[in-house]
Length: 461
Image 1 (spheres, rainbow, N blue to C red):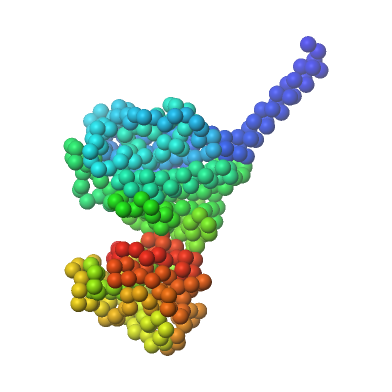
Image 2 (cartoon, helix red, strand yellow):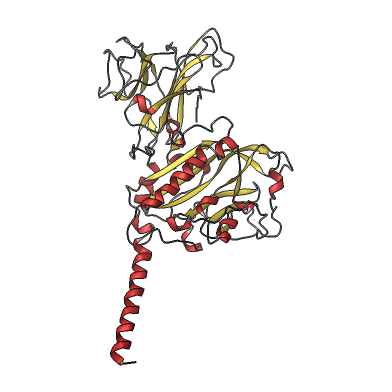
């Protein structure tokens, strides 16, 4: 072979190698299977690979990383990277596997422990996120990746969010995902009493946009973050996953973990406060100290009501604690300019709800949870107006939307003559409240979009 020909071939091979490297970085559709990719956002609990640590045992696999909790029989969290090439066409495993890789002395959960328990074997890293190879798919079927979930949660809003995350990869987004259980009251699966049942499961999705370089290098303070906290209950199969949107600050408070510790403090702080607007409009807010009216119920004590009292609930979807000592909630009937006021006290931490008990009716059988403040306003069940004000001066106008003292406002019911956005929130009833989406976090400044009528759910934490 002539030297010139050999030189041309060598040059071509070098060029092709360079192109391959470039494509590996420019396109997140390139499969990123390997231990170095599965915990890019950091280790939120400081878990370590120490067989003596039964509460925070670190497992790093090619398809996922996790902090396994032997005392609960499930992961504290599971973390993984998702790209388009991780989603293939292999057949879903039909078998769950006992994780015999756990250290000696750990309880190794078996699939039969879930049998007839009333709970699904809920994947944290989903099966459909790992269908590139049979081995990768089988790996997420280890019982160490499984959490007890009610079927209505597992096959309802939880699965819907999983599907949405995979849809992001078709536009070359590279979601970095972490999920886990939270809030245990000592309840166990009814088979052998070992695996604990969580009251909620949560998920955090950092939607890394397409581009060159590593996923971490493409994350900025404005990168989209989806955070949800979903109740592990029956009856939510048809509820949209966007109804459970919250902020990472809330999940961080509930779990005690520190998320995004692989990011700069500036970026991490911004992303923890981010509240996503759901599929169609995001973000809603990423600011600090943003308090919203999260729920209004005027049917307390009325015919058919369970709760004895009306109530108003507010929520802090920001990143800092808010001093409420100058705030008030105020109410007027649907077409009135006469307002009644309940002054607020204390503070409201990020990601927390604050319950204001109002007037009692003659009926109802259940007391509200302990409220932060007690007032005496009698709210109408089906139509009215509620304002959250940063002063305790009583309003005097029919429509105070836009008033500098008004922090948030809801007009509810068909006859309400004032509201935020294009229309009033739907009419509640004696047995339903108006609840803001995202557990109180979603705020598009449009009452008709942000609120839906549902069973009253007074929250004081």
